[in-house]
Structures are given as C-alpha cells and as structure tokens.
Length: 581
Image (cartoon, rainbow, N blue to C red; front, side):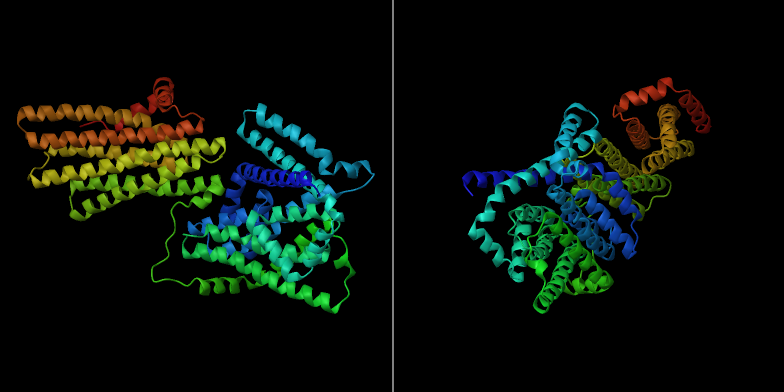
C-alpha cells in the first residue's frame, strides 16, 4: 500500500463522513414535521417508545443524533426519563439500517436485476437527479430531497474509494497480524469504542469496518467484538451533550451508556463462553459486508431484548448514579440541543411564546381592573408579569435568531420570522399594562378620581380593548384566521373611540367638570389603550400574513381595510356595539 493508496483512503473516508452528515441533516429537515408528530403521539408504553426510537433513527441515520435530541427533550421538560429510556433502546436498532444499505455494495452476481441493486449501478443516477433538484429547483423541500440523494451518492462513492484503497492490504502481513490481534475480544471492543468515540457515529464506524472487510482479513471473530465496542463509543456524543443540563437530562445520557455497557458486557461474556466451549468455524471465516450488517443488527436486537424488561432497573440505576439534589428539578425553557431538530425546536418556541402571550394579556386585563379598584397586590402582579414577558422576549429572540442560522426549511423560517415579530408586540402590551397601573397610582397619590362620565367612557373603551386582546390571543394560539380577521375592524373602532373620548374630555375641562391633573392621566390612559389595540392588530396581521406566506404586514392590513366586505360588516357591528351613550 503506497502513499497514493493512503491518500485515496483519506479522501474516501472524508467523502463517506461528509456524505453521511449531509444526508442526515437533509433527512432531518425533510422529516421535521413527522418527527414532531411522532413526539406528540408518544405514550408511556414501552413498545410505543421503542418503535419511536427505531423510526426516528432509521430516518435520520444516527443513533447519536437521536440520543442528543432525547437529552434535549428531557432537559426541556418535553419528555420524561421513562419515555427516554425506551426511545434510546429503539435508537440502537434503528441505527443498523445504515449498515444494511452499505452492504448492498458487496452484491456480486451476473444477474442484471441483482447487479442493478448495487449502489455503484444506481448511485450515479441518484447523484444526477440530486444535483438537478438542488441547483435548478427553487422549492426548499425538493432542494433537501436533492441533498439527500447527493449525500447518499457521496457516501457510497466514499465507501467505494475506501474499499479500493484498502484492497491492497490483503497481502500486507502487518495488516493480517493487526486483525489477528483484534480476535482478542477485549481488544476488539476497545478498538471499536475508540474509533466510534473519535468520529462520533456508530453507523460511520460500521461502514469503515465494512470497507475493511473487502481485504478478506477481517474475520467474524474480530468483527463481532469491534461491533460491540462501537455501541459503547457512540455514547460519547450524548455524554458531551448532557454537560450543563439538568439531572434528568444527565440521567438520560447515562442510560444510553449503561444500556450499551451492560448489553455489551453480557453478550461479550456469552460470546467468549461459546467460543471457549464450542468449535465455531464461522468465527475464522472472512467477514462480508452483509455479514457485518447482520451481526450489527442481531447484536442490537439482542441487547434490546435483554434490557427492555429491565427499563425500570435502568431508571433506578441512573437515579442512584445521579442522585436528587436539595434543589427542585428545573427545566431549560429553550434548549439549544433541540437545534438538531429545528421543527421541534420551533414547536418549543411556540409553547414558550404561548405562555408569554397569555401572561401579557392577563397583565393588561389585571391593569384594567386596577383602574376601577386599585390594590398593591394587583400592581405587584402586573409588574411581575411584565418582568416575565421581558425575560421571555430576551430568550425567545436570542433562541430564534440562533435557530435561523441553522439550515431550516422555508416553512420553519417563515414561522420563526412570525414569532420574532409577534413576541415584540406581546412584550409591549405588558409594558402598557404597567403604564396603566402607574396611571392608577398617580390618581391615588394625588387624591384624584375620574368623573362618573369619564368612568363610563373608560368602561366602554376597556371592554373593547379586552375583546381585541382575546381575539388576538385566540388568533395566535390557535392560528385562528377568523378571529384574526375580526381584530382590524375592532382596532379601527378603538381608534375612533379614543378620539371621541379625547373630545369629550376637552368639553368636560371647558365646563370645569374635570381637573387638569386628572386630564393628563386621562390622556395617558387613552394613549396606552389605543396602542395596546395597535399591537393586537400587528399580532393578527402576522397570523394572516403567515397563513398567506407573506410578511408584508402593512400591505396586508391595507388590503383588509380597503377590499373586504367582511371588514365593513364587522366594522359597522363594532361601531354599534361600542357606541358611546
């Protein structure tokens, strides 16, 4: 094996790992919605969790990615430790799909149909289709499909390059001695664990083993312990991802490690015992790509069969290894580990944004109540909610911006932009709630009260504002276009109410029914309530824009006002409903 073969090996390995990475990321983006659906349907049943783990990992082609994802779910409170255990077990089976696909490269037959099954036969066609989809089609989903095909083609070309580069090793005595050395099961396990820990992918390390199998020097006796060790090495990624997470997330990563260490220890002992007691000629036979894929699947299925009934034991074990602290368990509101699955990270953003929206609306309504009946408890509650919405805006804004820097689908990108717009409006609503409380405090501190006429007018405006808050909140939480369409006509009515109430205030001043001090507070109240309605209009407009794949808010609102018969009907209805007496 000369220097050029070494270079070809390095190049082939690079293409193989790059292709696997590109294909996996594109698969995650294309399957984002399905991954979210799987999570939503997840139950506490062992079988449901097991099948979920198998399905997700078979799609994204990486048990490491699945486990990191699960660690993020647990850290965010989206999943319990018990659910995570079953998914991790399933992930170990799902990851064997890659080895079966790679084993197709070893097909050797004169039959035309069988030959067509070889990746070397159909990979060029896939690459051609992939580059057309990626370069010449604008649809994001089709581009991702093109990347999946290109990633697979690159992976297979890398596999072939590695196989060709190492084929000359079959006649190298030192290489033969190396794999004779690996027939020692312990050394084989250590070698498999070390290689997989370095490249952080058991699928990739199995592929490398399959490439080495073409030399004919890799016996089943050496390959099986290496495969066992690969399962331990793949745990490194999850362990690293759990650093800085809460205790249940750390336990989840430890479940992955414990599952593979216990499974490997048990079946390695059985393997050594059988080898010592029974003559097994198969172990000295050269391993094939297909044989390695079979061994990989059988080992992972056996580990799962062994450990599935012991999931409760695993849960107790990791609870002992990572004990409960004195502080209560807390969950990370938004976990960057979820960036591995952008659609689920975005769903988590929706959950946090929904909490923020409900908090902001409640604070404004409590502030309206304080205008009628001020209490220190209510004022403190409004200010606490304003601090909470500020916190939400900070973490959501940062998280969404960071999420947008990742490769996400066009649909998810629009949704992220919508959320970024909307959270600013909800935060401002909570600011106006504090302003209303401060106005109530100013009236109290100065010993002033509103006149009966002003109180009646304020009640009418407050009722209208309460309704527009409910409409905008419903529109956002449920993506309800009917509620969103009713916001803009009501906002126009509130604008008119503000002007009418300002005029009435001036008339009261002229008659001497109202003091100038109270008048300043009155104008502040009108301004804050009218601007609250403006923010509700922005929120509803964003919901409508997103539904029509358009984020030109002002144009959409103009179109609603100018070209909608429904708008005119709603406007007239609200005008009658909130007519001043």
